Length: 405
Image 1: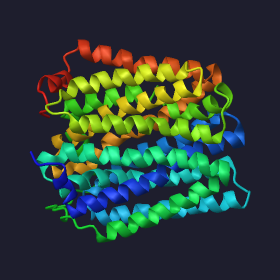
Image 2 (image 1 turned 60 degrees about the vertical axis):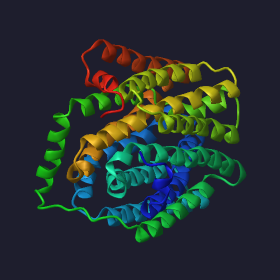
Image 3 (image 1 turned 90 degrees about the horizontal axis):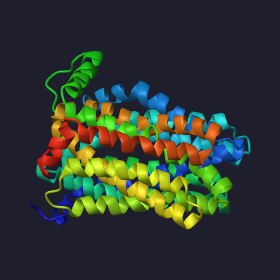
């Protein structure tokens, strides 16, 4: 097996790594600030949950189209176009915030536009990686990219909290706009082989082809279902503003620390996966999904900030371990000409799940409070893992096959 340094000698992968990390620094900081900003404007966790609804609408309606376009257009150019759309939306939100005229619907609209752009962005990003690295390095490329990205996701929310305390939400929004501009430039100099497509099916037939492929791969369907069990009911980020201000009694800077903690754990989880050899992938996915639920419950019942930060880091650790393997398995199961469409279908659970989960958990928190909402939600993935463990599941076969996918 090649050493990790072989990936770093790959100029295209190296540039892509830098662009993704810097972009995520702004994106993740802005997501955290969006949630806090709505809570400050409304004092309602249920209305904070509408941020998730805004994301879910775009993801569920547009994801199949995003995947189809990723398999028929130049993926670099598509990524540049999506970054430009997000740049405009985020800069506009910064301007209305600076002017003092911002309303919750402005934030919802910006989130909707940014997520709509991301539905075209994410399948192209995922599908671009196998074009840059050899097949045998694919899992390691994801495992190397994920912890590097998690560093940015760790710093982003913390930076957002500091900028809110020092200047206001508009500072984070402006910084985010700059990161989009930088990624556009990076993509302009990236060199990857052009996608070879013999002929284009009609658009809807192309989407149907991707759906048919996923339906014929039980391992992908069950990984999506397992992901949804955690994301629909354990969407912890939506309760963090209320946890920070009302339950723990801390301010914006501490909220930024709490929002960043899952990424610190995710960094450790991704590094652990990168260093493991002959990992029993299915076992890790099942154990990590159950661990995610347990950590959600621990976060809900944390009486002080320090324990809440540790629990939130545990959530990120288990999430990253499961996510790294799921992403690699999906890519390895899929031929290159279908990767954009399959990635877009998969992101309906991996990204649509958390978005709908924020609406779901936010609504329950509005009725029962954040502690009860997150506690009940954390039980669901634990039960789901128990069901899969007792059933004849391809995920268990993946576990028995060692590191083979």
